[in-house]
Every structure is written in structure tokens, then in C-alpha cells.
Amino acid sequence: MTIAHNSPVSLYLLNKDSTMAADKTSNDWLRLIQAEYREMPGMHLTKSQALRLWQLEPQLCDALLDALVIAEFLKKTPHEAYVLAREGR
Image (cartoon, rainbow, N blue to C red; front, top):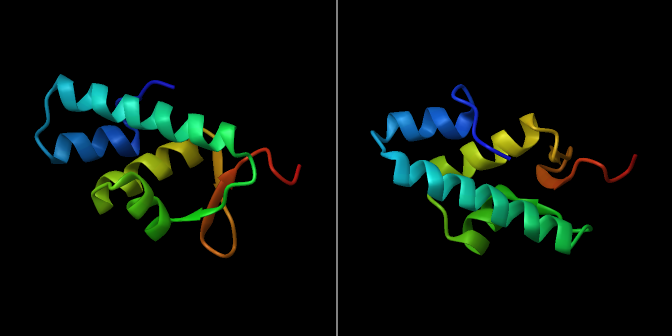
């Protein structure tokens, strides 16, 4: 998954006045999060759990989770947990 110029991650990075190195780091985070969800398909994480697990800044965590929801890789449950989008289909 690459970051689109109008994605939540891209907007976060622009607000942080970042460089291309930060963009690569965000792509690395997206790949890591996707890999962990694929490795543990039943994983349900709230935002606070994701913050602790990956030790992310809150704004970056929001941007990454939003980007994965928009890409339909994750979905947000009524209990505010993030799960694989294909679960329950």
C-alpha cells in the first residue's frame, strides 16, 4: 500500500512539515500494521491499544488507522476496535 497525496497519512505528514524520509517511515508503518493483522487475523485493537503496541504519536496513529480503513484493509467496529475488513463477511 502506498500513500496517496490526499490520504490521512499524507495530510498528517504535510502538517508536520516532513521530508521524504518521514513518508517512507509511514509506508513502513503501514506495511508493519498490515503484516501484524495478517499474522493475527482475529486481532481487535482500539486506538489506545494500537498507540501502546506500536508506540506511535496519536496523530500519526489516527492517520495510519484512517488510511487503512479508507483502503478497506481495516474496519472500525461499533466498539471502536480496528479489525481486518474482511472479517465477518
